[in-house]
Structures are given as structure tokens and as C-alpha cells.
Length: 170
Image (cartoon, rainbow, N blue to C red; front, top):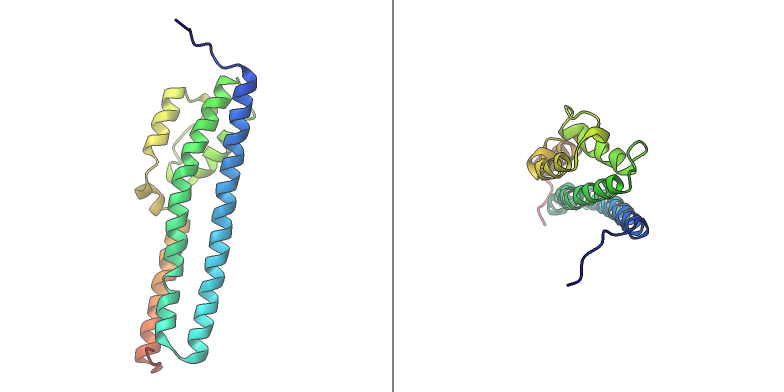
């Protein structure tokens, strides 16, 4: 029977590097999606106002919700990566200058401000922390609230363009 040996530090370092690269790629994807969608939103609003078409303004009001959806999807996958990175750093005995602890602090800043120092948490507490970060908690953070307010404001502009300013729908 073959016994399993614990992975050596070199393979753990490689896993850590890949987890950090994947986190950065997802964060970069979110930035690109948000930039592209915000540009599309501005273009649609501008076109709707210039042509006096309320339907285009209605279509533009969906753009903040697209950004919100991507924020929630990418954020939920990134929190799993942060948890994995933190566990690998623990196995490599990286405690003081932990990059994953910085990432996790950034994610927890608005969802769970009562968490103590991340460096002092045990592996089991880190796993429980990962499970406790749900989308419901993320909806109450500043970014989703601003995106929802932006959608409501654009829907208000749509209603005003139809009723007050007399824009045609199509």
C-alpha cells in the first residue's frame, strides 16, 4: 500500500502562486466588465437623449444590474480563492506578512467589521468564515447599494422622459 506524503513546500508555493494569479485575473476581469458596461451605459443614455427615445434609456438602466451581477459572481469565487490562499499560507507558516489576510480584510471590511485579527484565526475558523460570506451580506455593502441606486435613478429618468418630456418610446 502506498502512503501519501505531505506535499513539499515547493508544490505549496506553486499552488499559492497560482491562487494569487487567479485572484488577480478575476479582479481584472471585474474591472474590465465594469468599465465596458459603464461605457455602454453612458453611450446608450447619450443616444437615448439625443434621439429622444425612451426605450434606449430603459435599456441603459439595465447596465448597473449587469455590473452588480458580475460583482456578486466574481466576488463569491474570489472569496473561495482567498480562503484557499490563506490556508496555503498557514501551511507554509506565513503569518505576519500574509497577502491573503490583506485580501480577506478588504472583503470583510464592509461585511463583518467585528472580526479580530485574521492572523490569529485557526484553520477551522477560516473555513467557517468562508461559509458565512453569503450574497445576502454582500448586497448590503456600498458597491451594490450604489449600483441599485443608479438603476433606480435611470428608471426614474426613463419615466420622466416619457411623461414630462414627451419622448417617444421607440
